Length: 400
Image 1 (cartoon, helix red, strand yellow):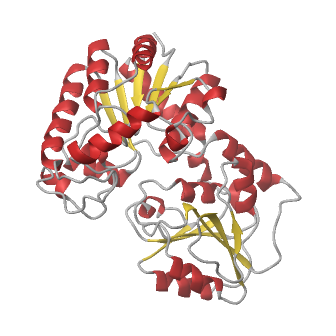
Image 2 (cartoon, rainbow, N blue to C red; image 1 turned 90 degrees about the vertical axis):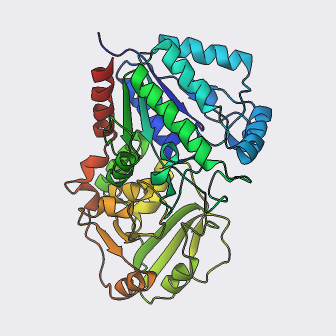
Image 3 (cartoon, helix red, strand yellow; image 1 turned 30 degrees about the horizontal axis):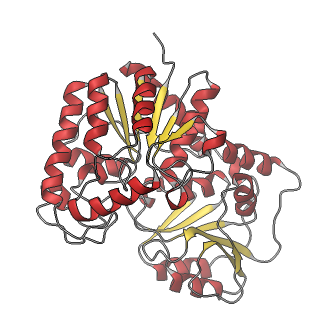
């Protein structure tokens, strides 16, 4: 018997990379005749997502419960058991109809994890859980950075400000609860743990998780088709003003992702131009073109197509879709070396640097323009959504 319905569950519907991956899966499965409803927590400011009315999706966490969950997580290290009755009924009904439950990000004031695990076990549903961060391995945070206490049971938390932040250190206790819950899942229903990157899979194995299979993210269908169309167009937009460097980050205040000093120095290199895409710039750098963050996938493809390389300085991403999007659009990538950026190292279009200074000096040495049709090079097909969906569909079918 084949797959007829897969339930996607993620805390957000319209914001963040994990939501984008889950939406791509849901949309692509629908094209193949497989219904994939999307259960999500909340949208901007705790309200409904702007995408809900145009998608097969439903909201689980009202604003007041999300607020209560935030307080509870800060003080107790877990969400409340509060849940709107109608939402609980809808979640159970849709899960009951589904052949597979696919979890993505289930932290950040969404709903209590034990409730969700209990429901999956009670309804005996095969489970796929894509890891977009470290949360399943830790006792508290989603992005531990260079902390490895999760491998030892989180005996103490060195950074209570790491997201989601906490006021009390209950990481050790919650680590045990989380591992017990995952162990019960894996003992009760067919369960696949799917890290989105090879390096994350290594950490998942170290943490004791089982049934691990890596499936790397793709770009979404709209963006993929936009880049193909632009690359083949005889009127492809190209600026005549020097080599084009582009930096993209939705929130330019994020110091873990944005090296503003490097961007200031990069903007002063003769023969180079710099475009910064994002919101909340700390200052205005002379000579830089600023473009607000955009959710329009065709607009992003057009913006990228007018540049030669992406500058990437984040050290906290897991499988950076920004790099995948730049490569899909035919750009080269200059990235600060991290475990995440190293995932793309085998591509001849990615160059890694240990320091911002070495990246800056490499840009200074550049002359000439990038050859046309980079977006059609072999290897870029890896980011085709068909590849990612085929891999997940094979996994679903093997579990049902």
